[in-house]
Image 1 (spheres, rainbow, N blue to C red):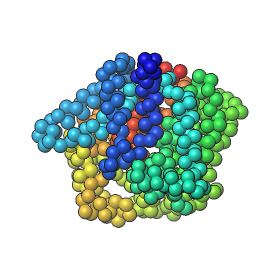
Image 2: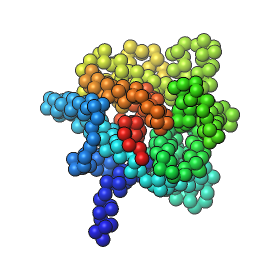
Image 3: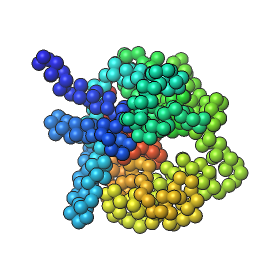
Image 4: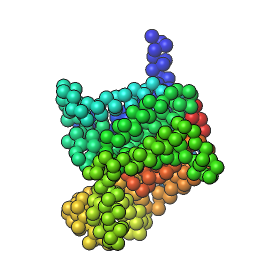
Length: 418
């Protein structure tokens, strides 16, 4: 009994429990209307940080400094306005996850990673083929525990949804699963079959974001763009996955003409070849441009509010910045209603929301990311993650409370992977 309790309380078991929870981040734990519920991860991370040894590097000092600045900003705001608590705690989820997982990724369980892929694959097969009885069970589960579960079956344009409100959200999990598989493979664990299964799931997702993130990871993992000599040092298994990476990027155009990624690139191609204006492209490619527009408004809002609108307040003031682009905002298929009625809207990435909320006080985090992403590395996993972390946290999409980009960042900055 003592040995069982000791194991359950061991650092390895806690790390793997937290990792498991991350892959089911969008499953509701409480009956409240928010997409991500990382409550257990948040509070367990605080306990681990308080009672276990956390190794801080020189680069990490900038992250710690950022957290201190964010805390001081929150304290001042709360004293003056009694607001910002939820936004403050939300911004802390990522940094806490980073500090907990950094230098502990060698504790990831290969069996756990494989079982997670099996679970995802099983649910994907049930939904895709609508297997009787099992399909009804999954549908019942989604209706209770997944926000906006109407996307479960997908459509001609979008594929199936796996434990999340939208198909595109699997993009984060696909990259994290690939990285975890590559980490455990360093110990000699065979992962080829599980990677193949994961690629199959990616294909039936038919999501632009999933295709792009997964394709980029595989390309940068198997190809070293650092030198021509290393570029041509490709083994047979690498050739397989390089081919798979390319196929993932072009498959939508061959098989899924109505898929989101095919639709995205078709819109871009048609507008560019017809020399249409950039604004026309933004109005045509509504879903993708929503991310671009809201993130841009977050970053340029520093001109109107150099010290930020306040924690959680950019979403209520974006329309002030958006008024500079009134023609675009008022015609946009996704944004126009909220913009014209001054309804709250958040930016699509952590950094864009942060800049909108606290302005120039976000600089320490930018320095931390710069030092992390531009460090030299010969490790394939770390090389593959750099661009994706940048896309997730800065340019494209990842909810503020989504810990996946931060866990990937922890892998990037970890001195020990095995």
